[in-house]
Amino acid sequence: HSDAGKSTMVKLMQEHAQVLCDERIIVRRWPDGFRIHGNWSHGEIPLVSPSSAPLRALFFLQQSPENRLQAVGKAEAIRRMIACMIKPFETKEWWEKELSVLQDIADHIPTYVLHFDKTGRVRQVLDTLV
Image 1 (spheres, rainbow, N blue to C red):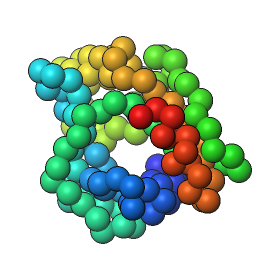
Image 2 (image 1 turned 180 degrees about the horizontal axis):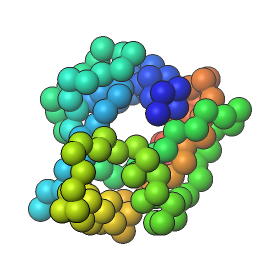
Image 3 (image 1 turned 180 degrees about the vertical axis):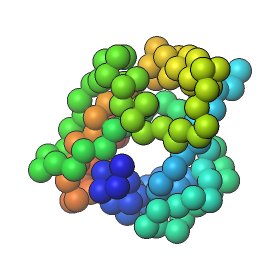
Image 4 (image 1 turned 135 degrees about the horizontal axis):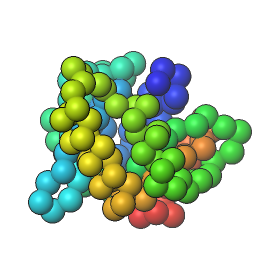
């Protein structure tokens, strides 16, 4: 959602990572696992890339006075992912497919709330996952 901190996070991390997009990321299931893909629909930061990367963790951003990770359970991860999805014309078949993908992500990808401040020290928290 707006003001979650997507652009702020890009500003903090752009020197340390390739930016795919600061607004909408496409997630696709491939035979070797999930990948994220950049796209043209950027937010505040006009950095975009047609590249992709393996999805190794999923973060729900939370601006905070501290930098820390909070693990999220599978049911909570699915609820939060549904709230973040772009929902085109919704049909029963579309929901069945999307819920299957979300369940697969929740089953295989570690999910966290990433609490962060604007100092850039969040990078040290993220480095613990690498």
